[in-house]
Image 1 (tube, rainbow, N blue to C red):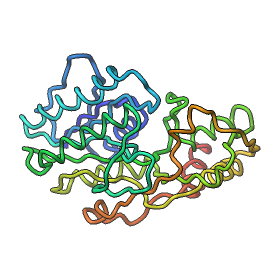
Image 2: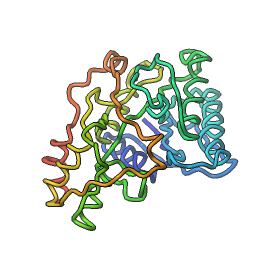
Image 3: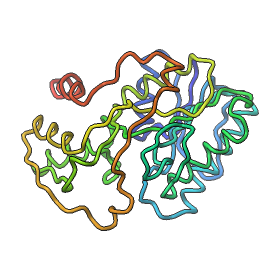
Image 4: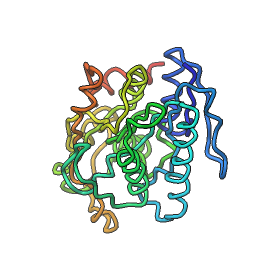
Length: 281
């Protein structure tokens, strides 16, 4: 298939492009340019990864223009040319609560989460099955993997701990992190699942997470074990206290009912098989 990946230089977009090429697809990339929408009629699929994904971004106009207005224009032109589209959404739409089913109410807390929620809402309100193409929106949970370096403070906790370990030999961990749990999904699983979904005659909003949570302290200890770093416990900054999610865990029954997912990469497997091999090559 011929596929266009927006945001192809970013963390998920670059991993997506590499995997799709590996699977034999003809892949091209597109980076956001103001007032420009790509010509989509030549593609079988558009994978829309491009966005301002900084959850702390306060410039509402900037987020609205990049994440909402551009996505709406892209949806319209894909509908016009019957070009299928996958859209990167986020579990942040659920807000600070612990209900993570696609049918549950959403309580977005940031401009980023709002921009994604409103796209999903538009799709559902207008009947996602009624478009002239397949539309798949994926609510990513806590994605980790290679290629996050440019994200700095927005890196996953896995990569953030790795950078701290490599730089200072010390992982800084918020106190009480044994009580904070995350649904960690490896980017390799994410791109594999989205490629498999391209072969399904299915439209919908889907959670993309493992449906298992791990506490953050355990993550830090695993990284420390694999890097030889020490752990230093610190207080959580005040500006994070009101927006720090205590728990995430995907209800992925809808996704599992669409494609059979035989296995999710665990963090232990990621370090044992993937990171180890990368270090040796």
